[in-house]
Length: 294
Ligand code: SF4
Image (cartoon, rainbow, N blue to C red):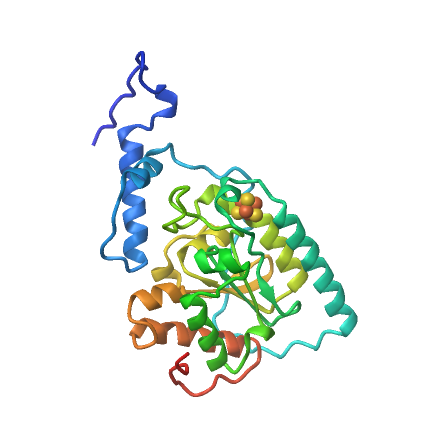
């Protein structure tokens, strides 16, 4: 297929430099549809605002690419981490608060306009496991806490089924402000690559303080935002390394909820991934069972 040649700007019409080519618009739409299919969405509404957003020129990363994420062996023998001292924990808590304060003042990307408050993430300051999602939704934006809506409740049940509590892990997102399709703030959307890249320094600073033994990315956007890799269906359950920390991508709890919650094959895929995480940190996975209803 030959690409249409760009048209010259004409009086009263938007400048050609600001108008995407038809090929760009079609590519953006195709990529959006592909992402929806991967997320398990079978029906969606594409209103004018969404189409206008998709038709804007392709977004390029504005900051340096994330560190290379390389595949690593799937079943190394893990050993439990030594217990941090109280002084370590206090220092980590203080540094995390400083990072949260920086985030609260941040205006580095357009998402600061659609947030009620920032959501830096919360949990144990020296956790064995760091869970990373894509970004806050409506409930998180209201409460300033990560994963507190329905998806958060499922994540909590899964963490409990692993024999842990939310207080023992850290839960954060790639972006710290809610992304919505327009300023009406009705419909959430995935953060763009630009937004994730703008926000990534905060998560990297948090990782440097937290020093988790394992990072678990939840869903497509978290995987792409942190590693630059796309395709959660293909890459789920495959160990990688991020900044020297073992990283395992798995599905987002919201994706499980859309597909039937904890009564689906995909739920058990996630459970298998979480058991691999437990083995990696030197813990024996509990018997296979559904998380308690909550
Ligand atoms: S999403 Fe991140 S980079 Fe964008 S305004 Fe919020 S804190 Fe800043």
